[in-house]
Length: 463
Figure (cartoon, rainbow, N blue to C red):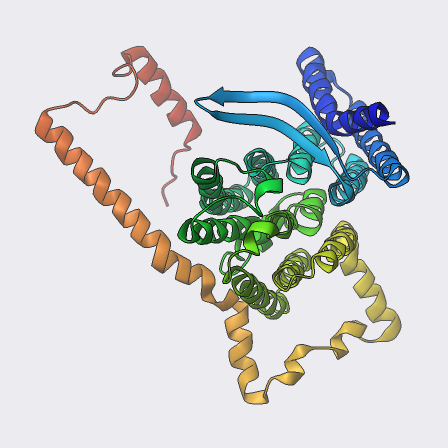
């Protein structure tokens, strides 16, 4: 039975990677001649194989009373006593997340075949969907934080690229860059936590987090950095503003990223790192406080949003905040069940969101009222005099974007401009020329560039 378990584990982990390789090779060989139907069939087959393998392995683990299966691909790096192993393990919790990933990714793939029919980015969408599945596999199965960080980055990159899917419009591109900037800023915390664990504790394996030898200051620092690293993808306060704007991407990607899987990678990271977080007294109160504040903020702000996708985005943030509270209180099984239930429900909500407006119009015609939800509201708990003020504050998102611009962005831009001015003065003082690349542009190339710019820019007409 043990060899069969190993084979199933390898099949589960290799299915999306094989689909990625097949798609890339077929695209290079056929180019635009690759049919949409074949692209969808390859991705659907990979997710189906992974799902069947995950369910089969789960059944064999239960019947054989085997706690886990470890898959080791050897050492990627071994230098001066440091060794980075490509090792993954499959146990009950990881198989649960893998099953959820394969089911929802397969559902989104089937839905997108019609949604993106004849779209110029059809192949690009499915390619990123497969890369995202690989990233989620690494997050679920990595035996160390170091390998998990690789999957964490893949998920963040595919998320930003799918937000900017319609890159010919400025809005999606701008919001994709904002999401990616938020990811990168908080991922620094996760990267530093990994570096400290590897350098000071000599291990970042999840099995050793409960006993890793670190001094109290270093332990507290790692716990704080892990919390910061988990805040970005979960859109935890005060970093909640990017997720509703991420709905600029296609509806299927919004469903699987910001309703199903990507946002839930945040509390899942806390669950996996809980052996270390439990050793730090302040970690649990901080997680509970941030989660409760995020849930309150998203609930109130979401009720002021006029479009369905943004409202659902804030609803997802509110639920992730509640899952953080459950993790902080030590209710890990409840948090895991909450992740699975909310991911499935929110995916259904987002995939059906294009039909909501027509359904509400039909309900208004048949019943004479907007919806049953209009009779329910937390605003009844607010005094009448404070409702206008609260609505204005929530409509502005608690002014988080404005505060971030004044307190963080503007000072950072000012600092960079001062550094650029200092660099210019030093260059002038040293007599260095301001050249880029291999030197000045040749005359013929400059004339051709100027001609193209003149053709692109229409002449302004006089009155």
